[in-house]
Image 1 (cartoon, helix red, strand yellow):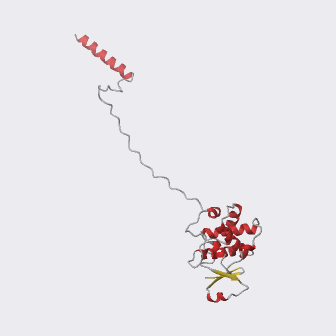
Image 2: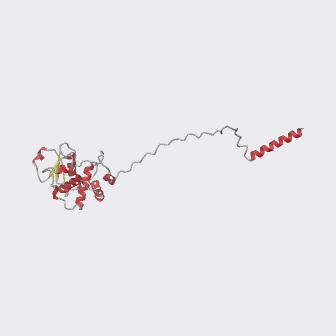
Image 3: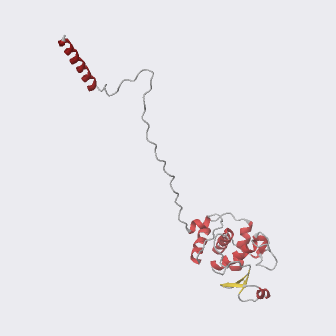
Length: 212
């Protein structure tokens, strides 16, 4: 009898060893009708969104950016680069821009770009004032204020005209600082109009003297 028991024990051990070797013992049987337990994964840490990197401002970007309330301080050299960029990338010319460019051309084509911008900003300052009309054409066409618009230029393809258009756009954008802050009047340095005695003189740029 003991021999039979021993034989049975030996047989069971052999079967168990065989099952382990086949990998069966690693997966215990799941009772019918029950679901296997799935171990939960640890929660993943949510990463913050990447911080956007603002592009470095360039003269070219400033030249085509829309108008804003942020005024950029520029040098005459930087203004020259802005004008060159705008002249190389022309856009359709609206009536107000054309009126402003004509006045810049007729009044200051023989001046530096810095002096031309000062003239253009006088016109823009008048447009922003409650005393004058709100459009560039209406401002420059007021009697005895600026050069007669009908006198030119005849050629609107030359370098001087393209520069005047670029200056007009820069003044209209209103993003660069005022060359002569708050100026509403100017005259050539070789004349002395009577109204100049009652105005605050601000500066002289080239052949023009500017007043508030």
